[in-house]
Length: 251
Image (cartoon, rainbow, N blue to C red):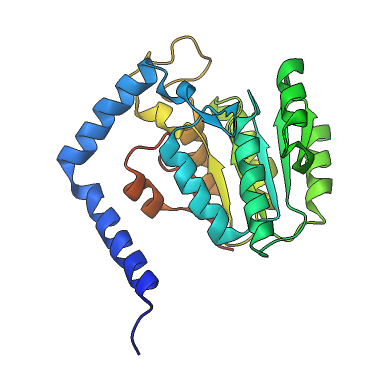
């Protein structure tokens, strides 16, 4: 039987993307570019539906593909900042609803400090009614219990971790929120690329080489066999702030 053309296209894309891992010139070019765009604060240049979003466009594209594949009715995000990322997630859930794929999609955003002007703009946004914001540390027991309680009524859950990027904090987040992820869905750990930058690049931050989201992911995967790293996403993006950070739940 002839294979569906879109499925054939998908298989060809995966094969092509996997070949990039062994393309030294391409990988070297990416690492050089990565260092320069971090210094230039490239990720701070973009907006989603009018709201600043501190993400690379490539990672947002990957997020769009994942959301369409998983079809979550709940997206949990740690780290709100300006709010562009939770607005992005709310917009994707709205599209899933329009397409009849989910009902009553919801976004939970957690941040230790939700600045009043950001909260005001998020709540006033046309998609603000799809968002629940919780203020407090994402690893505080009270916050974890609130998020877990809200997740109980949902069918498919996706998690994005993008708050404090120290090893200990991210590892605590993974242990707290990864169990909420549905089988076949993802826990996305942002800024794992810190580990691949030269030492001192993030000198003004409490994280850096050897102490960052990627080191936390490595430790988490040693103690938890329910997740694997989706290497295909890394390979096809090439340019990603979250290498080895796309964790898919398999059991």
